[in-house]
Image (cartoon, rainbow, N blue to C red; front, top):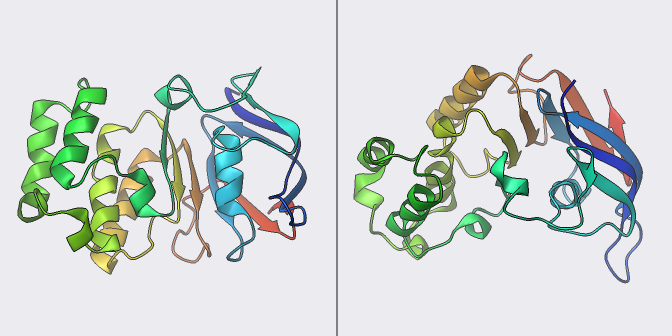
Length: 211
């Protein structure tokens, strides 16, 4: 089994609040396909940020490829794609043109000129439109357009279907089926996924349980 993340006695709370995540132990393989569920405010997004080093645990530790992860680095994300729940937090520029150019510069071997043209052809009418004029669903769909070129990376997707229309949801589910393994996806319900995931986790009252 190829290790990716391991959480050891992980706990976290925001100042002035009770424990949001308590004494959590979890092993995530690079080949796992995991669905993470829980109510709003249960700490799912916080857990993802702890796993990737964007937040520091109050207690316990996170291991990444067997080594302690103190904070997120470029090396951490060399094998990951992490798209946060708030679509705007994933943006670098002011319009789709800016962001896709940055993806192109950061991953020229993946977002090639040909791939860039393929993405642009789907969003040509939105290419230079400011993000302030685009809906959350349109922004999220644009972000997801890079995923077909990142199939070998481990995907961490926080509520990827929020604000997306039914067509785009179906397209993303089909892409996830093609990928098969190597993803951790947050959603409120397992109803839409069938047997897409081989593990299901539920976060409630600070405790993470595996179903």
